[in-house]
Amino acid sequence: MTGHPSISLAPDMLAGKPVISGTRLSVEFIIGLMADGWNEADILANYPGLSHEDVRACLSYAREAVQKARPSP
Image (tube, rainbow, N blue to C red; front, side, top):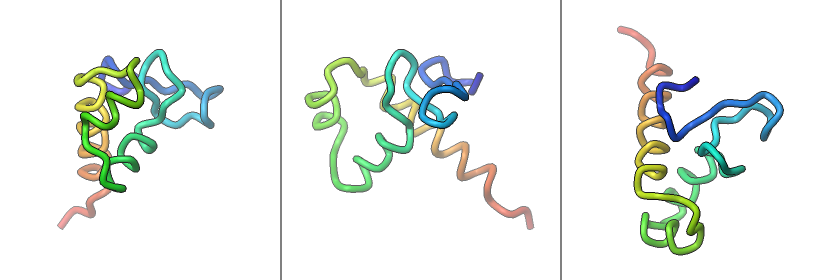
């Protein structure tokens, strides 16, 4: 469990990458789309099975991953 109900980890799916629950779309993929200039409306229009909450969960998951990776002073 990831602490995000919309995000799940399964070792047998996408090599264990965090994915949006009920899909095969990884957090990495969604963050990558946003890094490439896609906005939330673009993502939701192209992936109608996703919700606003799913996109926000990806952003929150990514933020927490970066926070954990930050070296402590």
